[in-house]
Amino acid sequence: MWYNASERMPEPLTKYASFDAVQLAADDFFQDWVRNPSRETNQFWNEFLHTYSERQTTMEEARQLVQRVQVRLPDMPEAKVQALKTRLEQTIGLPLSPQEAPVMPLSRLFVKRLSWVAAAVVLLVGGVVAAWYASQPTTVSYATSYGETRKVELPDGSVVNLNANSTLSFSEDLKDKAIREVWLQGEAFFDVKHTLIDAKFRVHTNDLVVEVLGTEFNVSDRRKTTQVVLQSGKVQIKADQQSAVLRPGDMVEFRADTRSLTQRKVRTELYSSWQKNIWILDGEAMSDVAQRIEDNFGVEVSFENPALANEKISGTIPSGSAEEVRDILADLLKADCQLSEKKLTIK
Image 1 (spheres, rainbow, N blue to C red):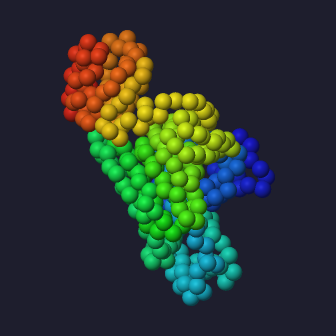
Image 2 (image 1 turned 45 degrees about the horizontal axis):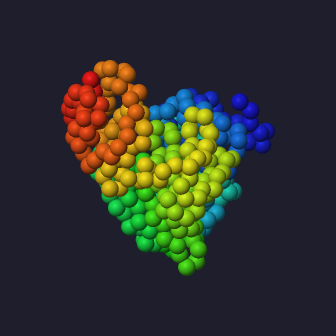
């Protein structure tokens, strides 16, 4: 793995394996990647996520923290800079030069200290930053549990239908922004309202940025695969160094394992019918239906006869509950489908 000479060389991947979100957000190399990604840093963090896939949620929390907390000491009033400098000196037991505190990012105040000193400063700086931003717009989050959907009206009048097992977050002052931004984990259908000032609307997932003015589209970000299906209007997709423009009926799919972006025409209702508590299937493999069941109801699906996983399913399935899905599948597959609290066995 190669990096530009001007970039700070990262520690081995193992350095970050045990970091929590705050520690990761405080790391200079991680901050540089979030704010100014390059081919080399993308390669490093993609490799890290591939090696430590269980850290995906931690990385996303750290990324959002870096994006939201842009504070540098020069942006703070001189009195607060001096107060922070004094508290840091008292905490770590070491003097700071008069020039050190005002010119360095928060993380560099402790990045060269011993690990126990670093931990103390992280807590102190975190408290100062929290107090500094107490009067700033807060982040609003909505989450759905397994088997639950929810309609969310955003401050700008846009409407988001949030599918099961999903989370949506945004700033409470979203309607006043020149660029309206939301963050999605899971799946949602967006009906974005056009504004008088032509404010752009961006949906961030783990791997994609979807940018629109006013339109209707579905975004699914599950199992390291992101799909965007456009129902009306026009959207632009950006992932790594790749981009695509969608028109009604187009779908873009991005796979995190191959970092590939593909585009094709689809029947949009196959991807948005969940809003009506139905799944419209058109020759979908039973193994893919099983993944839907797991993602939406938290129910693990197993096949006693492996051949059933390859069966193709077509038709309309009520999806209001796992029990409804089980009953229809039993009829379609002519199989015995046994459902417990956390497992569906098909045999």
